[in-house]
Length: 289
Picture: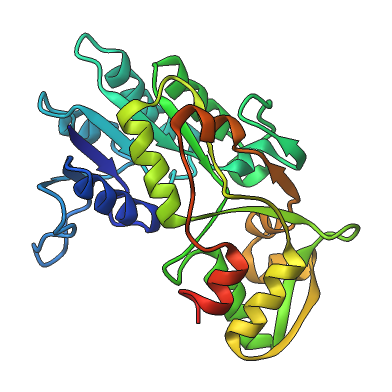
């Protein structure tokens, strides 16, 4: 298949492009043009230029040779703009010449939960306030939605932020609004790329959860981040109001969120078997060392 990848230069998109190529698919990358005119995604067969805020540019990039589309990019934060962009994808999925569409969302759309699965209702937190509407557009058009947990691996992502905070503070920290210690869901970026490509190949109009670890106490993650940074191996609470001053209120609230999310239905439906290191091992022995 020829697959148009949105967000091809991003954290998740880079891994998806690699995996698509490894599985014999041809990749067209939808990216902003580089200032110096060089190619931005060497692994792609071709590049198509535009901005995710420009629905008409995206529509023009979906040419007759495109068989599937993966949206692994960030939303702009403007609801009308993002719904217009996703509307282009929904029309592509339900057109006379239908394309397979996979939208990469995230488990934060589920809100605080202690056991959600793929059929649980969305209760998005403020940072992803209208993400459920985006998902619904994709699903109603016949596309697939993949919801990753907190993505780690390749030394990047939120995990790198936690390691950096530990290095700066001399100890591991976790954001909390008080009360019980939160738990987070996780997935390695390469396991996630496997899932997204599998969804392209054989997924349906359904929600899939990209979760390899369903509920890890953030204290364990903070301690591992401290060990990785070579500082005091402890987990100290970082009050939400203080974290908000550094990270912004919406992001700080997201980091204080407690979730336990299942991917059992996804594993069965797509025969997905994540195999990369878990978050603690990745921090202490893997890509963050």
